[in-house]
Amino acid sequence: MVEMPNVIGVPQNDAIERIQKAGLIPSCFMVVNDGSLVAGCVVSCGEDAGTMVEAGSVITVYIAADPSVEITTEPPAASDSGSGESASSSGETAPDDTVYDTD
Image (cartoon, rainbow, N blue to C red; front, side):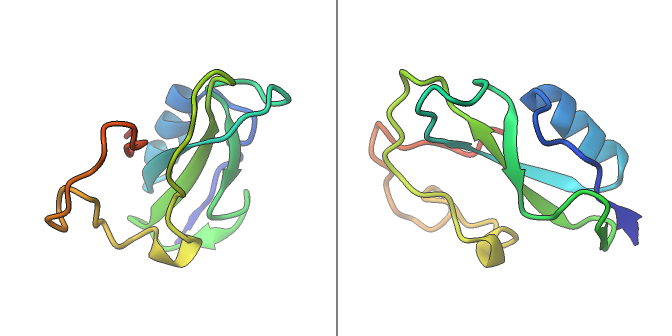
């Protein structure tokens, strides 16, 4: 078991590094930003900071998009974060404006 680091408010690249150093696998998704959030920073995670999780677990990380970016799809529910399935792996064709996993 490893401890989930606190990455809320941290820029995406730094958050990825911290999560990986803890022995976890980040899976990042952009979320709608009305301008009240710092673009490019973590706004929430699938696990709370300080929680003990199994080493090698996939951690869903939500990153604030630039306010000018239009988000057209919903990220998977927290229980789906480890499925690893995307439009490309499921055989579906993603529309051009789909937000892709950024890790």
